[in-house]
Image (cartoon, rainbow, N blue to C red; front, side):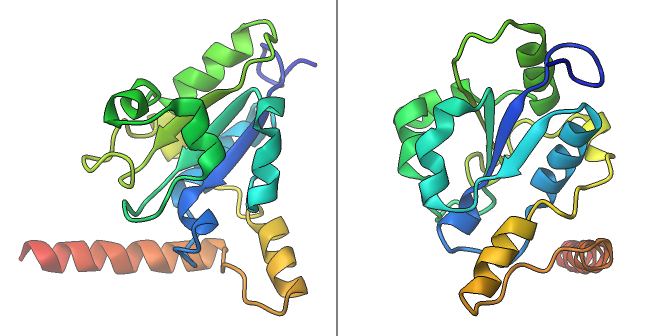
Length: 181
């Protein structure tokens, strides 16, 4: 199956490592933007929001793991794929857009590639998102399946909307500005 922008269509798993470790109720903006970018390229993608979903990682062409907080654990299946130690984590820290384009252009070899990013992995933030992804319209529906699962258990999900994300961004920008004064 071809993607809308050429190359082959990919199956991409997106992992909010903080969410899987019960460490956040805040949506991961980088993953929302990556999801929007994937949608624009015609790729199938989903948020892997439950540890049982990690059993089929090898069914994906690419798995993108984002972690904001360094104290949250990385799910075991991810650790098994990328190995232990800081050196092996760094090997997977590449530009998301470059990785997507690279995997699109290859024949399907059945191998799952894992990309790690965020301040939870790299104190310096690691490789940032490419401008095309950073400026992309986020896919605010990314957390819908997770929210439905939480509501089914009588629990609160994660608030994800354009208005909420704009307010959060304004709040964080103000906190950072005050911190520099």
